[in-house]
Length: 374
Image (tube, rainbow, N blue to C red; front, side, top):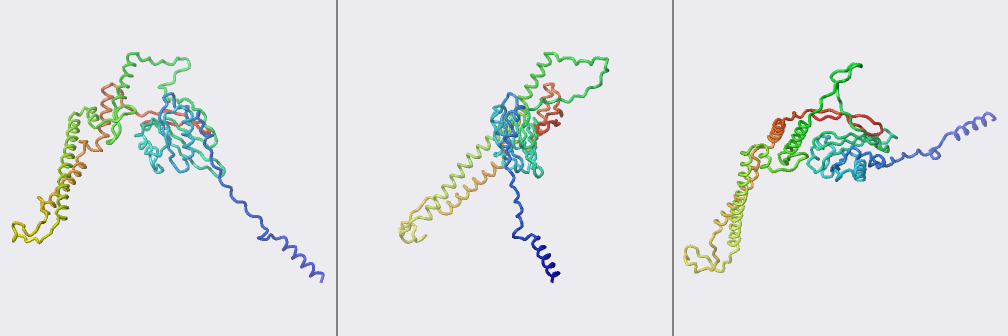
């Protein structure tokens, strides 16, 4: 009997020691991620120190999902710094999630801005804050500055860019390095005047939005061909414009008039009142009816209606095919590049070449980024 009591006591103790589902402690619920405050990351002095004194117009674009808040804080910092002109967002560009930086710059450079800032945000590891990369481009696609960092860490003020230079040879310790001869004042003034003339006369843009100068003002097709020295194409533009205007006026007036007359008499003939019998050829004096008679019969009215509609349709097709430009869309870039090369040769300027320099990369850790123009 004693052994049975001992066995029952041991089983009861074991059962009491096991946890039950009702008494088990609930698992802690995962904590929601706290919203990121980007205003501390982008102080006005940090984001605007590289702008200079010209106050450029800037567009700030959120390039990937999750970067809208960072881009908004970047725009607010630029506006608060008062070192930028007009600061706008990228809503006018539409969806840019599938575009790379070059595609975004091509879409944004037609806007009245001088700098294009593209902001991308990347999620960090669990428990770590997100990071960002902000690339600032000119309208020519050249990188102005590259920024990177982590949410919550303020951007420092940038350092001056460092130009890359490679000496031809290393001078001996005991020898003094040779000095480069200074450029004469007359040569320098002539070169600067040539650069200014080139900047004012260079061509750019696309077939539908031609521009001249730097940063560029919109010009008409006739002005574009005149700048190329192609007076023949400029005359064709004027001739084509007059032809289009004549066809539009003539076709519109003639087609619209015939259409209106034919439709009017069709309706009048169809609704004409007939009070008595119509005896046809047996009643040449029309004594048996007082039906209203119109100068245009139903067949003639229908023919006029068809001719007017055909004239209007033909006018629309002609205006759609016969463009003001005498050249095609694909020929325009070649004409622009050829003009710019010939202009530099005429002004005794060297051809535009690829340039490479080092620029600061500002963020949680300072560094350098290689900036190139090709």
